[in-house]
Image (cartoon, rainbow, N blue to C red; front, side):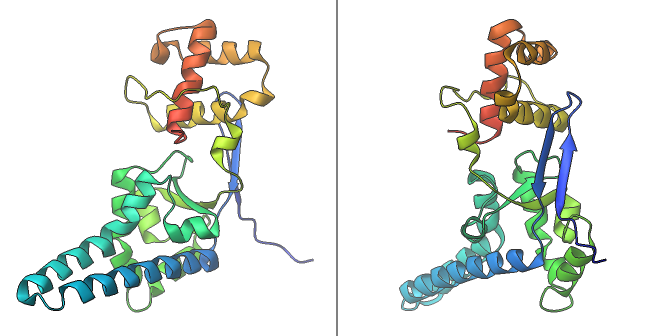
Length: 229
């Protein structure tokens, strides 16, 4: 009997809410990287054509821009575009933390700076080997940053109530709290309102409110965590 590789991964919150997704393997991630590399090369070419006649100043400017694009191009998109560079978006992929919360500056910076280690000894051999052997298809940078690359089966905004206004939390949240609030916000359509109020009352230390007011505030914080604008 053939045994298929299970690429699904799920997390159950303390409230009993399940959140699952499919981990992206090496092939779609390689294709996404190739698309991003193509975009960067086009930018390099454009800048090179502009600075080629400006002497040493132009060369210095070109080198600085090249460095920033090479190392912080993915960081910018992963932080400000919900974990998706143009290449990842084209392939339906997204970078998230291992608890499925949005990736932040530190996590994205760590995973991308360690691409230099993944590249060793040549052609991303360490990175490809790590992805292949890892249970969650994580390269070395992902392991260090605590991130994974998942498929995005549908847009998050389509799962959110259009009437929810995103609100940033008034105090720092732990990864577990972020995960619980995000998952709860996505699953409210399958939970009775009475049960929703019961669950959000448990978050009174965070929301400073209970009942319908606390429920609406939790949904608003969840929408913000999920990247709704």
